[in-house]
Length: 304
Image 1: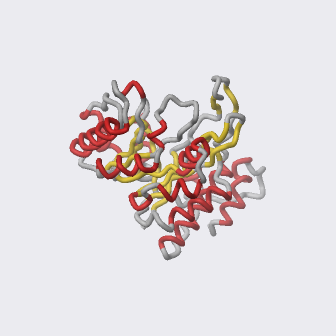
Image 2: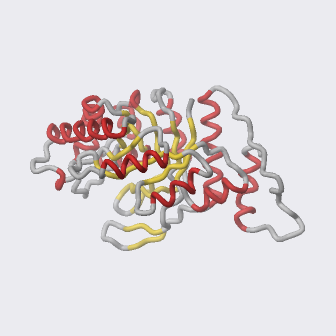
Image 3: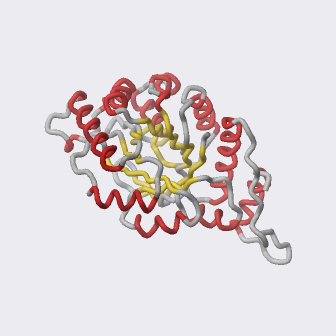
């Protein structure tokens, strides 16, 4: 049974309180305010806890802190990045990197007693990250050696294929899709320096690739929308700040509606539409607020 998750954000929290859209889980990253954010998020939905730490890093989180966060979140698993950087190992070879990843996963699995998911990382031609980290064969070996599950970030896969000069479908098909438990979803953007992971609203190509992946990734348990909750500011390759709008409530609802339809079809039955909270309606006697105006068509499209 596939569940639908989405980035925790102020826009999503507002929607959850107003119209109760079909989001089953909130995804929360490990950050400085996580212990404050967790109780608030859990009042609205169950939580998926996601760590951006590298599986190849030597400095693992304090076990007591990790245990407390797991207890606060009640997360069903722990996910982290399948990533290795030059500073992680004195001699950075594919084999040594595999051993470090396997060791990290074993330590986390033993300390948390939870399944471990490893997320594929975006490869850029100018990155200091070794190219083998994005190689499907190395990713497969890392998952097999560590007995971990794959968190497939579809945007990361698209970016990696672009900068490796690989065909998107061939690259995706070469990944160990049978090990996928969760899929992260957002749209990349083609910029001067090539395709970039920008967490933009999903486009037709992203939905097409998701549908393709789901035909083979039959163990998938979560579709996670990574739109929203990220600052509307990004950096170019030279460090210049640029505006990247990615917190629009209307776009958020439209993507949730589309993913909910996919989820229903994959699960083989229709999800019963949640009734609107009592008193929620568009009152024609007062001026419609912008966020309400943006969401009306999406609400209707979801059958609410």
